[in-house]
Image (cartoon, rainbow, N blue to C red):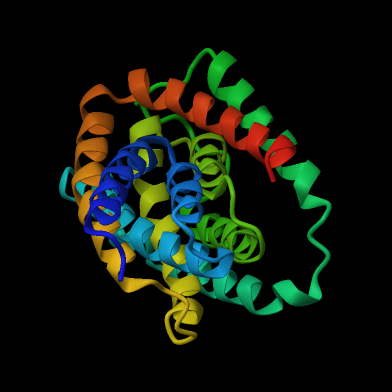
Length: 249
């Protein structure tokens, strides 16, 4: 039996994680250490984090979609391939040597932070796409979904940078599209975690309640302030994730 006060505190953690994740991704950086700190085994903490985080991501995605920043029809092929990529990654992770990712991913995240910090023309205005959205977003979804299945940290940042650099989306639209594909990728992981019985449901429900509120407020904040808040938060989250992967594994 988990102490009700602990569940209340975790709900607060879920709200904060949902707020940050809705704007810039990286909410797991807040939620996962909290789950480990209350004594959950690592696999149970990962599974519970995926479930509670998916609730907040779903709320954020719904909010961006209702405000017109996401076309679900245009994203459907990418969503299907993202799910397939994430599921494939989760199924083959035991056969892969992922040690190289411990260095490569932090370097990539620092690169993303520098791009968002110094690129002069980042805004909420769509630019000319370098690649066809319909043809290449599904490939982006599969590749990043596969990465999420085998490793995970920085998935939201990788989606966002792809939508901005390759497909010319403004930052707010890029963030909204990221939330949809990130949700799909999380659902693929849950298709493995839930049947395995790894989710600690009382904790997941408590944190999910906080995630709903945090995801909604975060999405509304991102929509209202756009690049002014999304851009610096992506920089901060990317750098913190890189530091965590390099020094606090």
